Amino acid sequence: MSDRTTSLDRLHDIVEPPPVGWWPLAPGWLMLALVVLIIGIYFLLKKYRHWKSSAYRREAIRQIKISESANTIACILRRTALAIAPRTTLATVYNDQWVDWLAAQTSISVPPRVQKILGTDLYQRSIALSEVSILRDFAIEWIHTHRTPC
Image: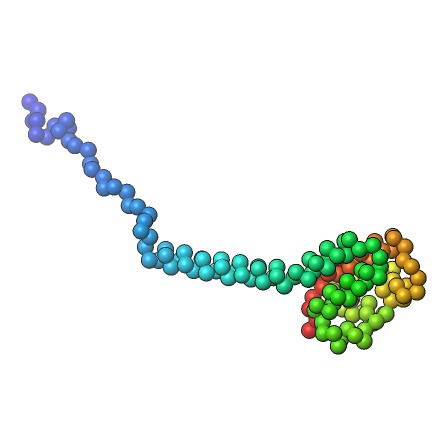
């Protein structure tokens, strides 16, 4: 004597609504996407400006790597310095003053052999290939690490 109207066989499954889609996005998500896009563009422009402003560094390093003489390396070092400092400042700086100015623009120390090469040896005698290599290594490191004078 079971009552057929209350039987479990007569139950139907619950009908679920379709899942809520992602699109169209709510206005808050669109604003967040716009803010992230603007910040991303800002950082890309900043990175591009930095890359563009350090083009003289890349060119100087490329030229130093292919140069074979100490005079050429010293000349490239002077031209690189002219990219960051006014000509009037560097025109009167030579020998030991030049080495001191280079040392003041970076946190790396100038090796004593490089000080001697840039100070006086460059103008008095020919420089050995081992000394040119020392000068080249210093010049590349200086170009990488120098900062603009105040």
